[in-house]
Length: 264
Length: 271
Image 1 (spheres, rainbow over the protein chains, first blue to last red):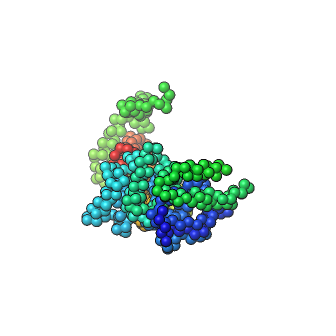
Image 2 (image 1 turned 45 degrees about the horizontal axis):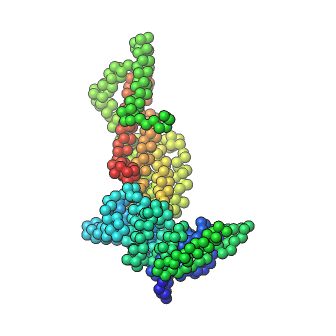
Image 3 (image 1 turned 45 degrees about the vertical axis):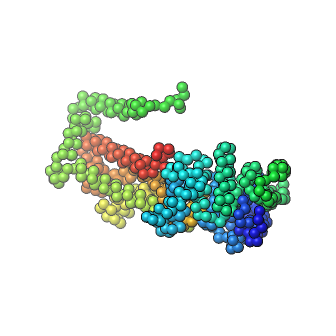
C-alpha cells in the first residue's frame, strides 16, 4: 500500500448512537486513495452502519468525516458509488437503460432523458462499460431476466460509469453461488486495477476479505458490559495492511482469533 | 392426488368456469317458465323473448318523446361520466400518490388529510355535492372522483414508499435529484400498480355512478334502471344490469392487457 500524504477519506472520532444504544464508538480511520479495504466483523458490529455513514445515508452522532479534505455532505452523492447485496438495479429499465441512467441524470436535469447525439454518446459509453463487466451481450434484457451474478455485474457497471471517488460494496457477492462468486472476485479485482478505484467492501466472508483487500479492517466491541451490552459500541479492533497477495498463514491466524472474538 | 396440485388445463378451465354461470341461467329460465305457466303476464321473472323485445325497442326505435335511441344515449352518458371520473381520479392518484410516496415532508403534511378524506363515506357527501355543484354532470363526476381517488392515492403512495430504499440510495449515488427520482425511478414503477388500482376501483366507480344517476339525473344507465323500477320492468332492468357487467368486464380486460403490453418488466419473464 502506498503512503499517500492526504487520505481520500478520513473518519475522525466518529460515533454512531441510536438513543442510548451505541453502535460505533471512536472510529478513527484514514483510507488511502487506490486501496481496497475489506471490512469484516460479527453481525451487529456496525459494519453496515459504517458503510451507511460513508455513503451519506446516515450522519455520525459525533465526529467528522472528510472526503478529499472536505466535510462529507450528509446525503448520498455521485462521488460515492454503491453496490448492495440486492435491489441495486432498477427493474423497469433494461441493462443499457440502467447504465445510461447516471449519465442522463447529470446531463438532463429536467427530463433525465437524452436525445440525438448526446444519447448516442451516452449509449456508447454505457456499452463500453457493460462490455468491461461482461454484459455486452445482454444490453436489452431486463434485470428480472438476468442471473444474480449478472445483476451484480450490472450494478457495478451502473456505479462505475459515474467514476465515483469511492466505490462502496455492501456484501455484494453474499447471495451468489461459490463458482459465480469466484468469477466476480476476478472481475472486481480487475476493475479495481484498470480504473484505479478506491473500494470499501463490507463482507461476512473472511476469505473474500483477504483475497480481495489490500487492507482488512475488523470491527468489534473492545469492551463488553454483560449487563448492558448496548452501551459499548464497536470500533476497528484489527487493521491489517496486506502487501500484494495475502499471506495465507497470517490470514488463517487472524481468522482463528476473529472467530474467538465473535464467539466470545 | 391432493386438490392443491390439481391444475386444470385451459379447456378444462373454460368448461369449469362456465358451469356455474350456465347453471344460474338455467335456474332462472326454469323459475321464469314456472311463473309464466302459472301467470302468463308475470313481470317479476321475464322470459328471454320479452327482454329481447323491450331491448330491441330501446336500442333501435327512437323514443316517441325525445326522438333518441334511449339505450345508446344512456350508455354514452354513463360512460362519459364514468370515464371523466376515472380519468380525473387516476391522474390525481398518480400525481398526489407519487409526491406523497417520494417526498417525506409532503407525506407528513398531506398524509393525514388524505387519510381523513378517505375514511368519509362518499355517499354522505352527495348532498353537499348537489348543493355546491348543482344537479348537473359536475356533481356526478365529482362523486365518482371523491369516492375512488383517496383510496387510489393512498395505494399509489404506499406502493411508491415501499420501493426498496436501496433503489432510492442508488439513484442518488448516480446523481439523481428528487425530481429525477420521481419521474425516472418512482413514476415508471408506479404505473403497473396504477393500472391495477384503476381495475380495482372500477367496481366502486360504478357504484357511485349508479347512485348519482339514481338520485338526480335524466339520462344514464342507472337513471333508466331506477326509472323503470316503478313499472316493475324487469325485462329492462335485467338486460341493463347484464350490459353494465359486460362493460365493466371489458374495461377490466382492456386494462389488464394494457398493463402487460406497456409494462412487460412488471409481469415476470414473459417479455
